[in-house]
Length: 329
Image (cartoon, rainbow, N blue to C red):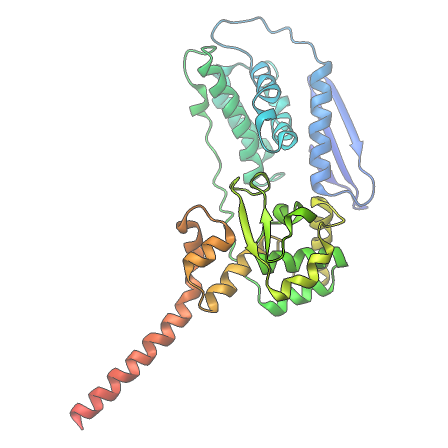
């Protein structure tokens, strides 16, 4: 098992390439994400030690060579190069001695071996790196066909429907440190993502709005969020004195202490949308606040509007019933 937790709660990470094996026991307090990153580092270290003796076959390059080209070229152009490289290095062991034409079997082995240890979304990130490596090879005429089409993604089924009430958010915030508490309320009162909250700088805070720089948003678009009175007390904590991982771990401890271990930080963004819609705010206004590029993304929250619609139709129904009584009376 590449990543595991022992009886004492300590995480272990190991990697094996060829006949070489590396193992590390992580320090107390390390998380599963830390173990997975360590595993990727160990795999990369072993690959750097290994010497390839696979003969060159025209039109059918080795998968290890193609993935190395991906990590050295394409991954560095992405918004999170280190993360992209980790996803690629994770599957390095399955690629040893295998060629582009064998990718269907290789992908099946990766999926089977990683299932149960990683979430489908995580496995898909690694498969995506391999798919892109093969696509790049085909575009550069290194392979006669596009072998990337042979890799199929796993169904993720990861759409969440957790929406918090104001009381639930307050309960989690009360169990958080001051900095994490500020991040919680900034996220709820602006609809910002965790990464966007963490990247707000002092210069981004104006008299009436917070300016989200284009490079700091998921859509890579500039956005302004109005500063409402309830938000102003929390602006003193911006920029946050802790980073992305600090907010992540702090929120985890707070939600567990509040008895809501299933809640994610991103649920604050969902809750912002549902609370606004429940108050009667138009769907298009909510879209602008959240920064969605398409109204269809915002429409997933439209179920919240059913309540007001039911009340409105009930009033219409009452008028109908009254008119029927008059006519028959």
